[in-house]
Length: 235
Length: 224
Ligand code: B12
Image 1 (tube, each protein chain N blue to C red):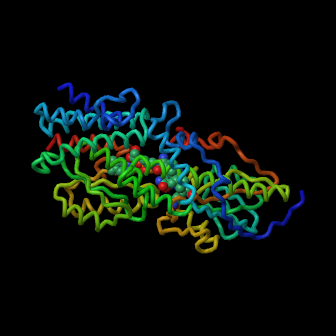
Image 2 (image 1 turned 135 degrees about the vertical axis):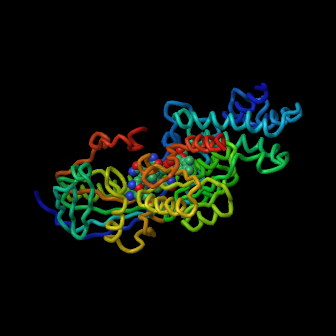
Image 3 (image 1 turned 180 degrees about the vertical axis):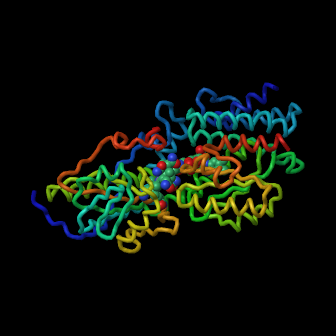
């Protein structure tokens, strides 16, 4: 196994709207309509929202690959350079063979969110809600795209990536956003973190991805996490 | 129950605003919440009867479906739209707030939190159940809640938090309210909350969904 000796690197990129995959079907599904039919006015609003969203979306994301080795503690903590993440057993298991950790954050800005909020509390709640759901889906999809970029970069060194894991999910306390953001440049991609660990803009996602020659991406993450109360499981 | 009231309830539940609205397709060309409310008034029913036995019943039905995952957020919003259209006709007829509202709910997302989709939705459903909702917005400090309690005598307080970090602020605020105004009832909701948490902080009701909040409030007004 040759170690590409990945050094500390921080990458910030802009992702174009047409690089991400959001379609009406997944948006409708994200609002809960799976077996039951989506009402016509909602379907129309979804199509409208997808057409109108693009100019209000400003996707900026990036990651930092920490230069340090990843160390697993029996307590369920994971140590990498100055970071000591209490990720819990589920995520620890997935990061087991990681040689490096990438910390990432991505946002779509707050224009769409603001528009959604105004409509929801004003003239057109349905449109407001659909736009909000659109924004959530866009940022998730943008995070997938960023993940893919990292995966491609890693492939060049013969490495693979794990799934992405976010503070606040799978038993990892959301408070640890502070540890994560402390390792990223200030206002990384325009994102700030409040005292209560809330990212601003709201439509942002952060987390870690493991890198290495022995790691694997898991297409069905619910198989390794058995949290019954997770909303993603219900869907 | 008067037949027209039942029809009004169905129109609200299904989001049928008026005759002109093409949705839902099977009701196309038929009277909607607006026309039916007008004919109920013309037939001599009071605004209170139409509100309580028509509109509110429809909102309650959609609220229950939402709780059972048979309806989703947009369905509730469509129903609220139909209810609001009919309310425009009734609004001028209520002589006093006391006839119009069962009580007042002061509602807000707690300090440090900006999530408001859930709070807004719960506000609409509770409004649809006949309550006056005073929306304080997001990032609402304890002081602001306490001021609102003073300004709205006898109100109930509703709070929302979406992060475990802001649940800590919720705890502080509930405790402060219970200290300053022990008789004030507090209801709480938001994805990461639990019954256990609500009990621990001294809230009067944990609301996994807005319907639970509406039911709790109903029990208060019934007991009053
Ligand atoms: C969509 C979503 C997002 C979107 C946007 C969120 C938004 N709303 O703008 C995106 C993708 C951007 C996102 C990002 C993140 N998210 Co998020 N997100 C969600 C999700 C899936 C849905 C939230 C939502 O809009 N729900 C719809 C509304 C209608 O539901 P609701 O707010 O719960 O309200 C309902 C009830 O609770 C109730 N209710 C609520 N309040 C009240 C009050 C009263 C009085 C009453 C009667 C009823 C009531 O009525 C409502 C209707 O039923 C939740 C999971 C979930 N199940 O909720 C996670 C969730 C809130 N997110 C979570 C996390 C961790 C994050 C991130 C920190 C992840 C990360 N590291 O990147 C970031 C943080 C973003 C930030 N700015 O800091 C966690 C929070 C857990 C925690 N420990 O604190 C959750 C709970 C997911 C989980 N792990 O289970 N998120």
